[in-house]
Image (cartoon, rainbow, N blue to C red; front, top):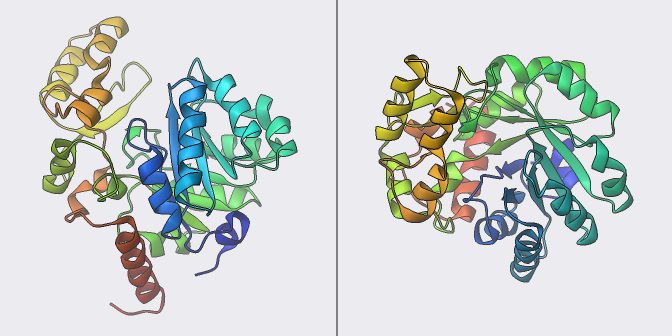
Amino acid sequence: MKTEITELLGIRYPIIQGGMAWVAEHHLAAAVSEAGGLGLIGAASAPGEWVREQIRKVREQTSRPFGVNIMLMSPYAGDVAKIVAEEKVPVVTTGAGSPEKYMSMWKEAKVKVIPVVASVALARRMERCGADAVVAEGMESGGHIGESTTMTLVPQVADAVTVPVIAAGGMADGRGIAAALMLGAQGVQLGTCFIVTKESQVHENYKKCILKARDIDTRVTGRTTGHPVRAIRNQMTKEYLRREQEGASFEELEQLTLGGLRKAVVEGDVVYGSVMSGQIAGLVKEECSCKELLEKLMRETEKRLSGER
């Protein structure tokens, strides 16, 4: 399947793996890229040299395009931005801020820049400052979320900018991908379904939580603090929401989730850890390789687009 995104990034399928903190490391990124999508290394709050090491490990495993996701609020964001340019990483995606101050450096290094946006205004701003494409991420996604749904955000962003739009949030099969393409997207970014792939290094407890999840099993914490996060409900989310309702301070609430994602991903603590997941988790029912997943997704997408039920 060829779209503006496959042509822009030099990939076989218009599918990008989300840059999930603690999840998106070199094993997963390389496997996704090798299978025909675009794998991403999630820099999160990691030091620059860790990211450099991950980049080089991906290159040992695949010669295909891949990228790095930078959380711009990270204290190491500047270091990682320079390393992306120095290592001539094919693609960089960004979140939690604006990448404008790094844009000229990346352009000189011929890095494709794709910011994640949650509004039309930010999408237009990113296009003006030189973005090659944008990811329009709806609130159905896991982790940090915005206010608009994917269904409403994607067509409005697609109408507002001339660069290609990638849809994110609420997709885990060919029906969702076909719908996103019909809304005006040129590709999709998926996260939750990649967490349970065989190449994903997350703890088995985390994978089991997603595989067992139902449609009603995610909760959003942090709405009152201005930093809403979606995760699968557990003792931590229950306690957080109770204290949030009682008017607990931002600092008190932050203590509840400090290191929570690492607890879940690395240590397997799915009771008090943060099991970040999209609302679509209820549709994710099997563990397979990245290659098997991508091929299945594209078969389903092509059938839907051709009118088969």
